[in-house]
Image (cartoon, rainbow, N blue to C red; front, top):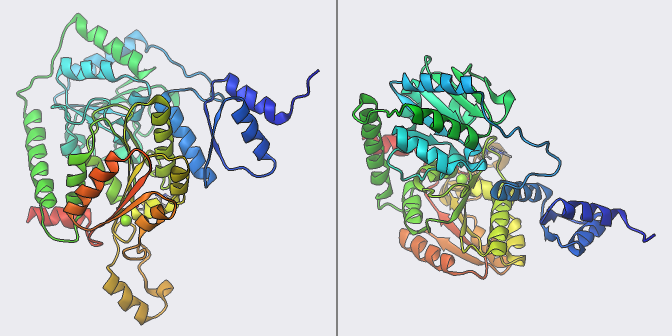
Length: 455
Ligand SMILES: Cc1ncc(C[n+]2csc(CCOP(=O)(O)OP(=O)(O)O)c2C)c(N)n1
Ligand SMILES: [Mg+2]
């Protein structure tokens, strides 16, 4: 009998389960496994840190919908009829309804059904960070620009594959009304009733359950009226918030603030690009200003706010683009701290010529930082480990040079004009990755900006 090595058995077993990519870092004896994988037709992607390798692998799973071989089959299925009827009766009694579209909706590919639900019932909706794009962000029923108000005053919330974790403030006051009724749709039984007791709980695949809701609604068509006080409140709030961020975006002062940087970026990004993002202000403000038109086109720090995921996610998305020839750009919008977690993966991008466009929003720190002059003063005052605020990072660090070190393109960006030209140039280059190091005001933060723009 032909002798087989353990490495071959592993590789062939993975291949037999349709595994297409392997991410890792080799050493003795894992090198044989990677080589056997290549022989078996699996693409081996050598990374610089195992954490980033795991993030990349998880993004492949999310983007392709391929089940990971070790997971039990999900309970794809329909909700019970009584539960559907119960949910619809709660919905029809709503005075201030709101649909929240979560990552689960994106994962279950429920975009067509959810669009139909939103449009046939004329309901306002709000995406969670990775639920963005299931229904396009620029859809007239999207009330993301009035998020806080929508959460606070809704009396019935339909949760479609979104979880009541910290991203949704656990569903609790003061961010939600204490009387809010939740209609919860989730694939995972343990999630039902997590943090809040739902008025209706629908266990099943989002796509299947939304189809059931549509079917039931069609028996006796119902629309939420357009002329309600609720719609007026939401629309007024959206208009005033849009005005505020526009005023911030158009401030001519240098260094730029977050809103100015994102304003120019948003104007230049192709509609079908995949946006990867992590950071704190960078991710939060970027989420509101960079719109998604397509489902599964946003990957960010997600449920646990884990910094370090961005470059691995971007590598996965860029590899898929390369294999599928989809012509989609992958744009990775990183806070300067967030970039540091997996920054060495720029070498991986350069090695495989993955044309990711990394935009580092560099404010010299975590949430905020200090400028070079202040830093110099602090250096003179004594030991920086005693003095420097824990959020600070080295001012004006040249992350663009990191990319250049490996043969990618690096741009130092300090003005809107430089930002626009560097971004246009990077988006036109399919041969190598680029990094735009966008120096913004280290004191630019959300609170200050909100109070400034209120004045
Ligand atoms: C693994 C991990 N470690 C630490 C944190 C704490 N943390 C939250 S946001 C953040 C970085 C925010 O700074 P930056 O990426 O520069 O974005 P900014 O807010 O400055 O725009 C950190 C370190 C985290 N979320 N995850
Ligand atoms: Mg920062």
